[in-house]
Amino acid sequence: MNRSDLKLSTVVTFVLIVLSSAYFLESFNFVYWQKYGPGPGFAPRWASLITLGLLILCFFQSFKGEGIRLSETFPKGDGRVNILVTWASLILFVLFSKTLGFTVTSIAMLTVLFGRNMKWPKAVLISVIVSLCCFFIFKSLLQVPVPVNRFGW
Image 1 (cartoon, helix red, strand yellow):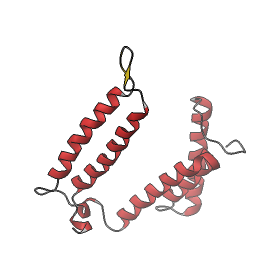
Image 2 (cartoon, rainbow, N blue to C red):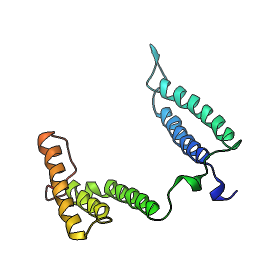
Image 3 (tube, rainbow, N blue to C red):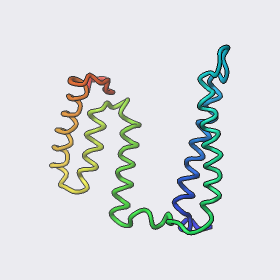
């Protein structure tokens, strides 16, 4: 089977099977039954097991009939590049925000995202303003714990 022949429903169902399997395995870390009834592992174990069974049925059913191909789902050219840049910047933001701090990583992420459609100096300026505003709102007004670097920003 060629990669371009894959259906979107098959890929999505496979990803959900992997996630449901991980959830099912994680449910074994909790007590299944306590002295007076079901423990904290009872509901997750059964819910993930039922979900896993239904997803396996959906996975085999996705091979039958017609459906949207994976190659038809994502845009071509600049649209695909925009999606890849957006996901890459989000992943890098999550990976580096604890060590570099919220402000530095959000400035870098927003500069990359804004820099695709405007000149870099303007993108950097807007990124700094937006990041500092978000940092002030979350840290001071909402009092949400925001990851900071050793300089406090």
